[in-house]
Image (tube, helix red, strand yellow):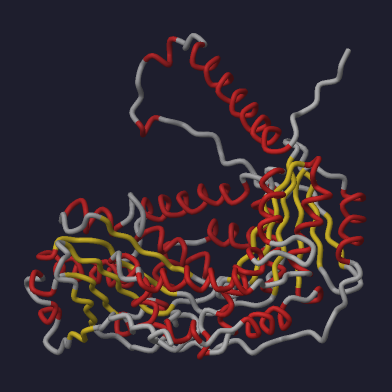
Length: 500
């Protein structure tokens, strides 16, 4: 009998996915056609429904080792589908770029991939990856650099080789750098197109400060300062084996994968470790009301808040429960501001902590222009109420259930789990941090919620930002208090330098 083989390339990958979807659909169809028991024919009230306890989260088996040149490697086998994916993290970030060259890290992360390699020019590399139905992607965010690959298991050797080339032998072709800069200029020109983007950007600048690496933005002038030599220098500074964590998950044999990694990365020479000083963070504005006037808008986009904390705070579990009381469809903000008072199209809050620098506490939403002031007052009232009024037993149970129920979705597949383990290694967190957090949420009491609300929510530090039509906001924002001064924000985009 002839042995069945998967088709090669993109057809093979599509075949696997369609086969999986087909089996899932068939299973659902059979379940739907199965006769229902008589008891299921009578609808139950939602309060009568009983649900089994949440399954215990299990970390799949994995191995961790380190190459002689310093690369830390995680391997996690998963043979459910014939696919393999990998991610490399590099200790870098756009917070480390010079203030007069904002955008340098982003360009480096982009052209690292799009610029091609010494053996495969950009177009050749793109075509070959497309033929293999594979991908290699790179990028640099605020606090890290990353590179990833996805491949069919049968093509792992070739795709991993291309992935290695991108990391070790990039050419940063000038034409691809010019293209990336052109695309970035397009982003600058469009950055005021949506009020949501304006609100998010300007709110971060109000909290962190315009010159802070956590809030500064790319301008035409800083982009013009960036040359190919700058990109090469940034790459050479941070992309080294002893500055790298690599994780691979999928359908492979760990012994063979280890040999492949050693063959491709083992001779990459280590350099002197780089431990840059991280930027300090202080809140730029202690309170205040700010307005971005957009006469064309018929509604206001509101954000209020102040700097928050880090994920490794011992109070972080209780703070997420506190946020669960405020946020979500069953939270106080939704129930009070939207449902009962009808003041918002959307309303939300978030205790958005970060790994190694302070995040933000944020509340806000969208409302009618003439409801802007009542909306802000209502949100502020709920922030004050959670500081001064104990959380009820029902609210506490709802918030904890919401947090714990969403917790299991952090482990839907091995790739998510491996990514989390790598992040903990990157930022120096314990490998069982997520379970410590889970236990902390489970142990949170009503008094804990009120304690952290009183300790961490600072009404006197809350910055209020409104993006809306100043003439249509009635009563005006000055009515928020007897001493309120509204500071206008100019979001005019500086013109690019004229071409010589």
